[in-house]
Image 1 (spheres, each protein chain N blue to C red):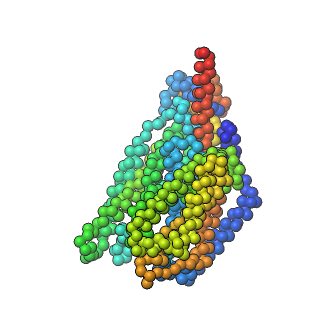
Image 2: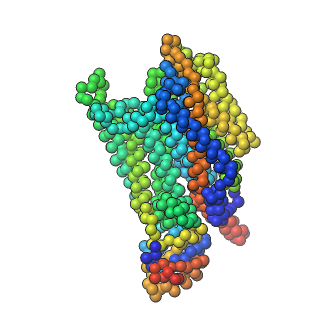
Image 3: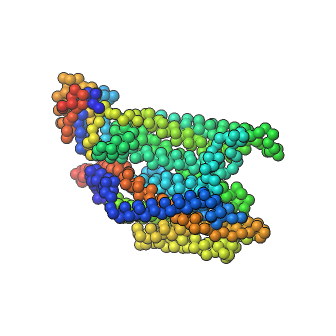
Length: 451
Length: 178
């Protein structure tokens, strides 16, 4: 990016907040319509019961739990990646972090709603909360579902805080430029930010502590989601590598989601000078590493299962490799490994378009992976007397589509309310670069003078 | 706003702001009466280095400890609070591994809460009414000034700030017309 003045940066990054194009409105209405349709289908599900879904004995976990795992995985895009880059002091992170952190907050909220959507009586979701019922009985702390409650809520609180704290100086920036009601709203949100050295230092320290705290929480969240499965003696679930396998998959799909979101923001908000090819290239390299790691985990898990040759494990194994689920299995391998590998490994192909194509493939592939972890194991559990099949109903498909639309809708609304790139962080990065450049120039001039 | 007396200069760049700070220091203004506000953190300059020391990491650790103790207490109590005739087949009633997971999550939550509360208090946030502030800071200006200067020093401070490179010199309170 050519060096811009602070005022130019303000103009560029605050412009999307005041300009609303017809295209934006059309997209907003479209996504809103899909969400409304999905909500109405959910209403029908509440009224008629879970019979409107394809869930039936023995497959009681299917689309909804797939979505739960998928969205929780996607949430690793933001806070975790942002925290790692922040701790490593990766200077290229500055335009990326907020785009990423927003994904975490929204996808985590959507993911956390799926166990509730999945309940036959969602109004009783509060039974999971750690408090005693009228009979004095508490929820069972040994259940991984209760661990989910603690882990997801901790991660959500941490991620919301991690997103909100660096927004305070930007809220103050908008407050000082706004008038009337907008000024009052942003003035309230800025919490009295003035930009004293004490405030800057405390904010930086708090962000550092949060970054340190949020990484293990993020890892624990997806480990615990994996233990929802691994704690059960179900073929292909009861695996010791499930936790790291899930965490790696989550980061993998998270980076892919981040690349897609960044490409969308770049195009629609005209942020070409801020979200540059280098950001896509660097994230593309990370995606490549995660693709290799994902393949390693899949291979390792499958090889161990195959070598063990345990009867019920192999039943599910062959169902996915050669049986009725094999088209999905090989589609997953294609989307997560075969297609992204050449695109991301060959420098010429690692362009913005290339990384976006690879990322779309990875997001599709990771959704299929979550589905393949859950459904075949339940459908082919133990002896053939307990086998069954599953076919999603329109209710499940539309509610799933509704969550994707909800994600897009929330992201679009957010981008109109808050600068999607942290303005002050970008300026601070430029100042450091400028300072460094001036020091180098002064040193070289002094050296030339001495000669 | 502006019930406090102050004289401040608005500087366009950090080097001149640093000169502004030094000129106030050389005039004998104690550091607690020097006012600095900037649109971004300037760690490389003296004016951006004030008030660095903080116990926030220790408070976060303490919050984590408190959260962890609360988490274990909750996990322990929810297990022993079941009716006393529960049959556990010789297994311990309080299960260590699941209790550890809940303890871990609440440890981190405690640290996060402690960090937020410490930030809000020590950074003096949640005070929506300012005594001294200038919206030009959001337009890239750096504010360097002196709080509660003696009335007879007004001209001296104004000159010093201008000489250091201040684009504008303003005041609040009785110096409001500076």
